[in-house]
Length: 372
Image (tube, rainbow, N blue to C red; front, side):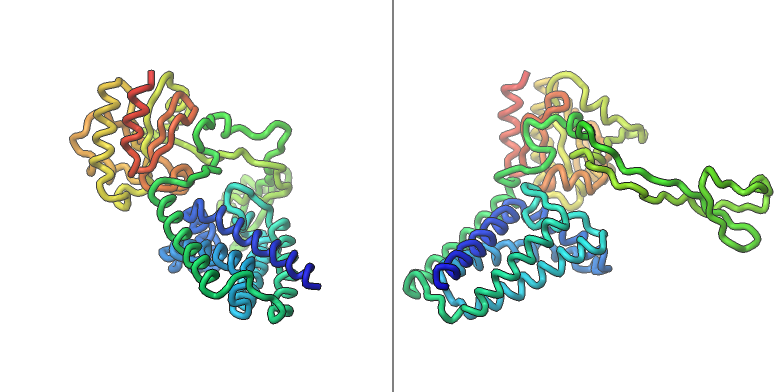
C-alpha cells in the first residue's frame, strides 16, 4: 500500500507541477480563458481580476505539487487539492456538457485538450487525490521541517519571478500560432482534408403579428405579399467541422476600412508591425520606444505599421512621428498574437522573424540592423 500511495503522490505531484509550469509560462493566456467563463456566467465584473487569479492559481498548482512530492503538511494540502480538483472537475464538466466553452485551458496553448479529454483527466485525478486524502495520515515527509519549508519558499519565489518575467518579456516558450518562424498566411489555411462547419440558413419574418421561420427551400407561396416583414437571419450549425485553421480571424483594415491583410503580408522584404490592443492601456513609455523603432525603420527603408483596435489613440500618442502606417484589427486577435501590450513583430513577408515585448524594443533595432 505504501508503494501505491507513493506512486500516486508522484503522479499527482508531477501533473500539478507540469500543469502549473505550462500555464505560468503564459499567465495572460489563462486570464483570457477565465474571462471566457466569466462572460458565459455573466460575471464580467471579475474580468479585471482575471490576471491576478491566474497568477495565484498557477503558483498554487506548482507549490501544491511540490508539497505533495515532499509530503509537507499533508493534512492541509490534501484538503486544498481535493477542493481544487472538485472545482476543476466542475469547470471541465461544464465545458463538456454545456458546449459553451470549447477548451478549458488545463495545459494552456502548448498542449490543447478537448473538453472531453480535460474532463476525463480531472476525473482520474479526482480519484487519485481522494486516495491521497484518505491516506494522508500515513504519508511521512521526505525531509525535516526546515528543509521542506525552505524548498517550498524557493518554489514560491520561483513562481513569482518566472511569472513576472513572462509578463514583461513574453512567454519563454511561445505556443501560439503567431510564434517566430511561423508563416501567418500558411497558418490561416485549413488543415489538409479538414471539413469546415456546415450551417443551415433560415429567415425569420413577421406576418399578421406572428413570427414565421423558413429556409430557402420552403418559402411560403405568398411570400411576395407585402405583409411579410423581415426580422432576422438565423444561422444554425448542423455539422461541426473537423478542424479550424490555427489562425482564422486575422484581418488588417486600412485607414479607409478596406481589408489589407494579404497586401500587407505579401509585401516583399522586411517590415515591422507593432501590436497594441489599446494604446491607452499600453505600457508606460511605449510611444517613445515606438518612435525609436520608427526612426530606425525609416533609415533602413523598412515599413512600420501600428496594428491596433484604437487607431485614434495610437495616432495621438505618436503625433509627429514619421514612417508610421496605421492598421485596425480586432482587439481579441491582437491580444492573442502578442501577450504584452504592445508587442513588436519583425516580419519578412508573411513569416514572423522576431517577436519582442515593449521592454525588449532594442532587440528590434538590433534585428533591423541585420535585415536586408
